Image 1 (cartoon, rainbow, N blue to C red):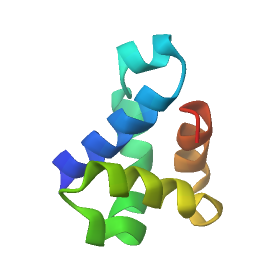
Image 2: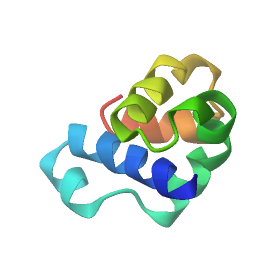
Image 3: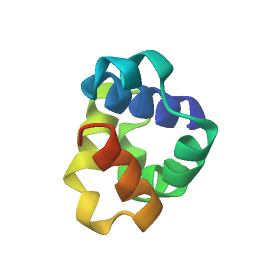
Length: 75
């Protein structure tokens, strides 16, 4: 499950600026969204594109830290 969350965050990074896409999510960013991705998007484990969309779709319900990550990564 963690791998899918990381892939989803990498997709968020890819949708942001080229500098963000190259650097990928930091350990802090991954940690900020891990619980939210599990809570709101568990049905999309193994489906990175759907996980990415799910995080964006649920942005209003995400924790403040994860919401900031999604916003910073172009969500």
